[in-house]
Image 1 (cartoon, rainbow, N blue to C red):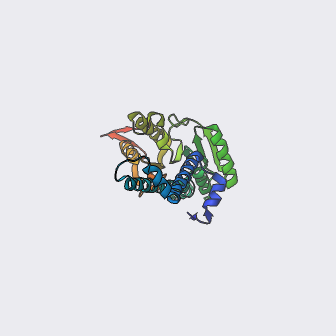
Image 2 (image 1 turned 90 degrees about the horizontal axis):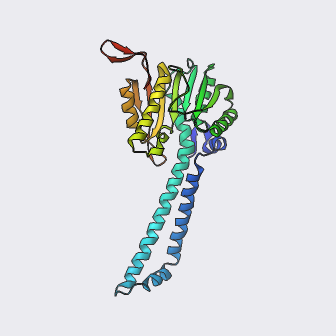
Length: 293
């Protein structure tokens, strides 16, 4: 969990961006500590616990049953503590160093940033990916800008603060908006990116419902709509990546690439990149220029 990219380590990244959904990390840690204490009690007071359990058993093998029960519950609590500590560590790693590392990989998957004038980050959160894009624009001497879109005004304000801390505030614009109906015209952005966000769309319906899947594909269609012909899209998300690939294929995107599996937040994740063709051929001799989905 040390160095993540270049000379930056997780402590530097945490100092700027912090952790989203801290309550989840605290919940995992508190439960891990509670199970650790409980397993320690079983270990230190194994004999008294066996006598206590034996007092409730009246069979001829009650002593053996009591020892088995105490040992079993002690082992279960110890194993639960280990699993919860591991889950907490993975959550922290995914939220801080891995998110930063994947942002660098996503930026690197776009070939030529010098020609990029407008970029969009869907669900920008606290701005890890947004600022990585802005930093790349700054490095190439581009006059372009990146727009971060989030559903919360408070989040966009904190994102602007992180951009200032990174020294890229002149390249960043943040807006509050609904990703299901992007407030931008067709063919507007050269690059569209999104990191660990798309799977949260439609969660009010339940992750595995048809309604949630329809909402996710709708957002993906909106991303394609606002992307310029010849523009590049890069997504990093959890669980539903095969669904995104199928939808991109239906929309006739080109150069669809899927990265190797990366474990993030205790589940599988992949990065998907694609290019929007200059023209969309629907059938023989027919070209559709309207990308609304």
